[in-house]
Every structure is written in structure tokens, then in C-alpha cells.
Image 1: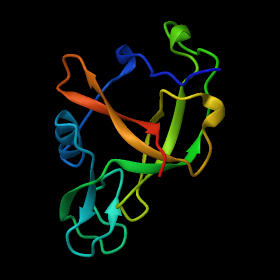
Image 2: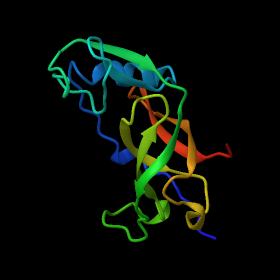
Image 3: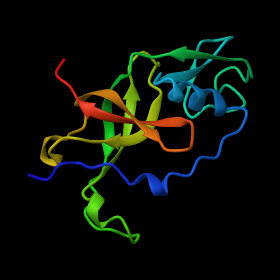
Length: 145
């Protein structure tokens, strides 16, 4: 059995701007949020300066349940960077977020046998606090629904 691991924190590099900073501020409180257009209600992740539907720049940050499902994933079994060997396998995934109108987030599926991961399986967010960064990275674990 190969359990999906977390990428090492040393490879986490955060670069924010006015459009992404509220997302990361929420992660510090272990809250999963998504940008929602204040004018038409369309969710957009990643947050962008203009709504793809109505071109508004007004955003509301909507708190989500933390649930989702696997939209797409891959299993990484070979290290391409020195220092990754002990963190294999890891599973980068595109997660469709519950309650966010189809918006998706790129993250990792962790703490599960990689053979059990499939498109459509239900997930729940778990948090990895990043030392000295004041944020947490959302990762996802499978759950029964």
C-alpha cells in the first residue's frame, strides 16, 4: 500500500497580490473561501481582477464547507527535485469545491492509499500550517458521504 504524502514545506513559496491575499488570510484561520462576484454571483478561482461573466471587479469572499471532490489528479512517484524522495508518492489534484458553483482549486490529496483515489471521490479539507509564513495550505483527504 502506497500512502499519498504531503510535499515538503521547504518547497512552498507564497506570492500574493490584492486579488489573492484574502484567500491566504482565511487559510491562516483554517477557513476555505472562494472569490464570488458581488454583482452576478459567479465564483472564480483563482481570483481574478474581472469576473468572466459580467466583468465586474467586485468580490465577496464566501466561506465554504471545505468539502469537494476530485476533478483530476496524477500520482507522482519519482522525485524531480532533490529532497523529494521521502515525500513520495504525492498526489497533486484539481478539486471541485462544494458550494462554489463549479470553481476548482489545485491542491493535494493526502493520507490515503493512492489506489483508492479516483475522479469523483468526495474530499474534505485538512490544513498544513506553514512555519514562519502565517498561512496554512489546504490539502484534502477522502471522506464518506
